[in-house]
Length: 177
Image 1 (cartoon, rainbow, N blue to C red):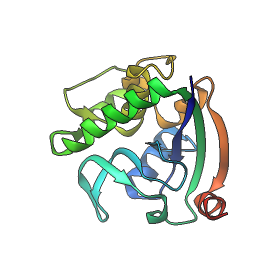
Image 2 (image 1 turned 135 degrees about the vertical axis):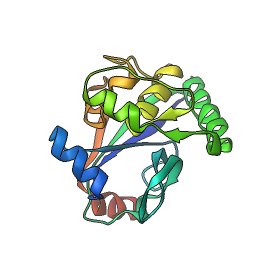
Image 3 (image 1 turned 45 degrees about the vertical axis):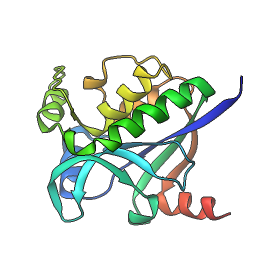
Image 4 (image 1 turned 45 degrees about the horizontal axis):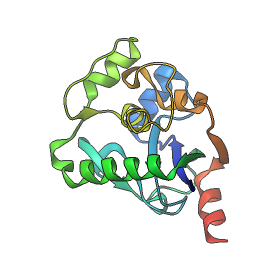
């Protein structure tokens, strides 16, 4: 059966919310996204909907080219079966088609900080979304529930292969080659 690649992008953007999370956790990365179309394709995550407003936030499509090129990042790829890839793609498409029903889970982020699992229907924070999507489609086994996974925890998932670590401009220049 053919295999496909999916991508996990971890970043630390420098927004006030990212700086707050970094200050509280000291994690290298404060945001997680998932992409199915390679490093230069769209990535999906739970984040701000508007550039200069932290809220409202929800399910968004992100382009690597929109970020500042000096954003620290780590790009991972994960090999999955064609069947798993199609499940991921279909679930992602379904959620994105109904994106107005999904919201950012501020309470989930706070609960995660206190190592408490908190879940509400249609509410996610970025790493919870990525981890939950990967787990529900059978792509990975997680070391703990998605509601307790911070972006930096995603680095510990088995079979993730680092493709790029450094500044975002490195992904942009590599994708152009």
